[in-house]
Every structure is written in structure tokens, then in C-alpha cells.
Image 1 (tube, one colour):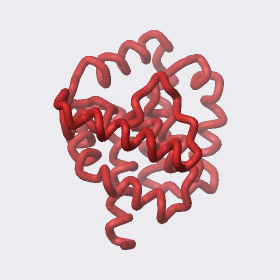
Image 2: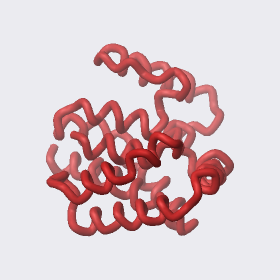
Image 3: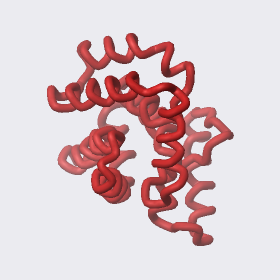
Length: 172
């Protein structure tokens, strides 16, 4: 499910590696991926916006959006627990789940980091991916609402993930 890999990459911190793959990303979006016409349009608009920014400005915008505003955090358990003690066990459980399923998680990020979650679900079949994301549906809705209220260009990406999490409820 390479669609989740694409979403993960676009939601991750922008770097030179991303810049080197602009055309490949564009080709994937326009190819046979399972994005709706509306999603393709939103992805291409985001890619156009990203490509129109110098990398350093794109990085600064990313940090301002996701790291400096708690309500936009890509660490999903933050939206559930904040800095409460309950967050630690949830992070441990998620990390153990990844290990039990063969994912060698990037230790630079906490296991609840949305791009890491998307990398994990990209390894699952569509139903399992949707069911895994269904557990985060409410958090994704809140995050998407917060980003949309701030008119963030990243809101459309979170909405795409959110839609896939809600589709799992319909399939169950």
C-alpha cells in the first residue's frame, strides 16, 4: 500500500531526499494509486506549494506547524494524554506492537509519530491497515480539524488518512 508511504513521506520533516524525489512523487500521485480525483488534486496542489518553497523555508514552516503548536502535533498520543503518565505505557505498547510485527522502528521518533504509523500500515493489507488506523480515527479528526482551522496546507494529508480510518469502520 504505497499510498500510505507517500502520505508518510509528505507528512515527515522535509529534507533534501524529498526534494530529489519531487518528480517521482508527482508521477506516483498521477499514476494508478488508489487516490480519488479530489485527493489527487489536493496532493498535486500540496506538492506544487512545497516545490515553490526554498527547502529552508519549507523546513521552518514544518517546525512552526508541527513542533511549535501542540494542537498540531503529529505524535498522536499527545492528543489523548498530553504529558500525562498514561502516555508512556501507550508508547511502549505501540513500540512492542511494531516489534512483534517485524517493524524496525526509527528510534529517532516516538512510535506514535504519524509518518511512522503510516510507514507501518503501508506494510499491511488494506483491511488490516484500515483497522489499525481506525483506533486513531478520533485523534485524526481532531488533528485534521486543528490543521484546517489554521489553514495549513498539510490538513488535506491528515484528512486523507482520517478518511481511510473511517472507511475501516464501514468495512467492519
